[in-house]
Length: 403
Image (cartoon, rainbow, N blue to C red):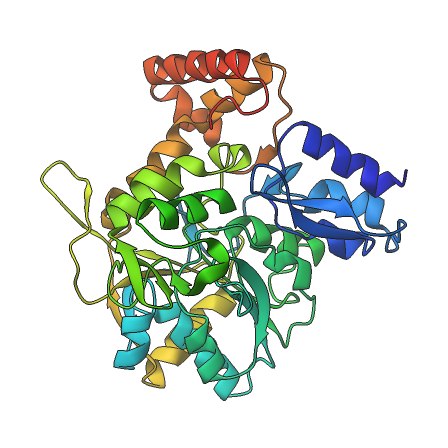
C-alpha cells in the first residue's frame, strides 16, 4: 500500500474524514464514493499514482489530520469569528440573484462578476446532479447563467476539493474544510492560490437524510425526483423536491433542524473552522435574533454577512460594490456572532470535546492557531460536562459517538 493510502486509511479508521476530496489530487488513483452511511469517502479506483511530494503534503493538507488558522498580517482577530479585514451585511443587487441565492446571493453575485470581468476563468463549486437531482456533484462554471443555476445551499455530501486547482486565475467556492485543504495544498500562500470563497458550514449531512426527508414529506423514490433544492428562492427558503405530478416541501426548521442537521458526520462535530477562515471571502446568514438571542427564520429578503479574510478578498468585495454588483452595509462582528450560535458555541466547547474524544481512544485532527483551549477553559464547568458527554457517547458507540 502506498504512503498516501496508508495515511488515508488511518483517517478513515478514526472516522475523521470530512469528504473534501483533496486526497484524490495527491493520488489520482483514489476516487470519492458514498459509503454505506451516506457520506463521501476516498476509495481505490485504480493502482496508486502518488504525485511528487504527496506523502509529505498529506499531513498538512487533509482536514482529518490538521487545520491551521490563517492570521494575515494587518487583519483583525475575533476569537469566535476568526481573522478579517472587513465585515458587512451584503446582498446581490440583481433581484433574481438575490432571490435565488441561499442568503441574499452575495457569493453568487461575486462569482458571476469575477467570471464576467475575466478576473477568473472558471469557478469550481457544487450543484445538483442533472442526472439525479437528489445528489450533489462538483462542477466548474464559466458564466453568470451557470452561476445562477448553481446558486443555493446543497446540504449533502460533495467533494469540490476533488476538482480544485492551484491556478490563481481560477476560483473555488466550497465548504471550509475543502478551502483549508486547497489553501494548504498551495503552500498556504495568500495570493498564489485560486480565489477561495466559502461560507459558514454547520456540517455535511448523510445523503440518506435527503432521501429520507423526501419520503417523509410524501415524495417519490429518489430516481423520480426531477429537481431538488435545499434553500434559496426566498430567505431562508424551503426544502423542495419536484417530481412528475407535483412537489413536496418543508420549511428550514423541519428540513435542516429536524432532518438534515442531526445527520451530519462525526468529523463535522469536531470542526474548528466551520466559518471559512482559510478563504479570501466567507459568507454567512445574517439572521435576526429573538429576545433569547436565537435566530429567527421568518421569510424575508435575503441578507448575507460577508467577511473579507485576506487583502485579496477585501479588494474583491470593495470592487464588486463599486461595480454595482453587491450592496454593502457595515456589520458589527458581535451581532454576527450572536446570529450564529451554533458556530460560536461549537468553538467555545470544542477543545473539551476533542479531549473527550482522545480519552475515548479516537484520533482527532490537530488544530493550530484557533485559541480553542483558552475558549474552553473560560467556561470550566461547561467544558467538563462536554468532555464527559463526548467520552460517554464514544464509549457507547465507538464508531460514531456523537452522531
